[in-house]
Length: 236
Image (tube, rainbow, N blue to C red):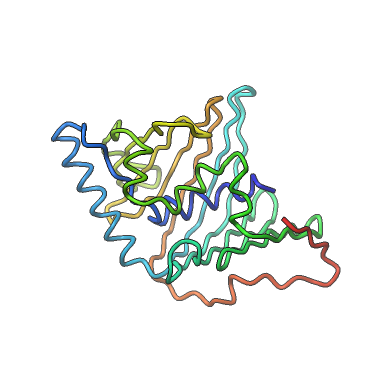
């Protein structure tokens, strides 16, 4: 169940601009200027983002098997008035299996129709799990981020499939973490549209947003999952 929460961490913490990474002071002037430009666009996007609707794809790569699993779906997001803990997220996977994750005010419901089961709990309850470092990024201050990450690396322009122009960067945690590094691709509007997280065993998870609709009209009912009385509820 925790593995299904993992994409939420990336989407909220990075893809919708919930985190403003801060470069270390040791970056060279040229890179520092480019990074400042990227962060300025990201901050502008975050400040002006009232809602988000997008298609989402996720690829999880297993380095030992040299194989990958792919997922496709739709994500809806409305930032909370008091920060990420009050944000609203609906992540609905349509392939290869139908599953829905809804998050509202720090509570989550993960519904698996094929099993007729739903998991419910508080998002804070998963902080002790393997992906806690990623979840923690959602609420880090600028000072904490300066402590956690070193200089931006591999800062460059890159065109993603579909002809989307982006600027790419890579950040490495300074201390203990459940991953080796994170790569981020930011589009011209400051929207991070792709992330790649590489774990210590070289497994990786790549998440991509396409057909992004910023500030779309989204009903709050989308963040509620109406469950039949026959659905088995599992407390998380």
